Image (cartoon, rainbow, N blue to C red; front, side, top):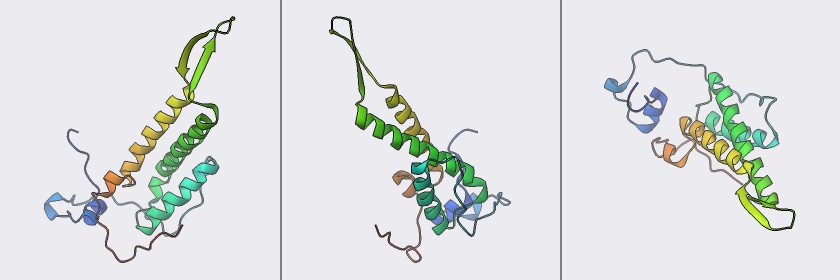
Length: 153
């Protein structure tokens, strides 16, 4: 399929662009979750934090669906991997230095963790955009003012 991927009807409704000519007559509908499910076992401690944030946000917007849970878990794993790898890089530095037997510097190279962090962030951003979780993706969605509670931190 060429061009932009089609937007789900729910996102069109939120954005205020749900014109009859733009809607699919029998778009697939999936089960929306009434309660936030328990996180999957494969999530790390950081992944669990991401899970709580994302599922809570999607649930409050009535956009948490059963079929999306695996993709949300993948997002949480990728963000956790990014955060955990960045912590390692902060502790150990980003550059490896190699010396010869006389103690002379031969070369410097970036640590492999940098590529892991970069790749995991790129993957997480791709998934996040599908759920409207990035700043640019949010600009395309208009939410009604009522029902949104300010986040207390």
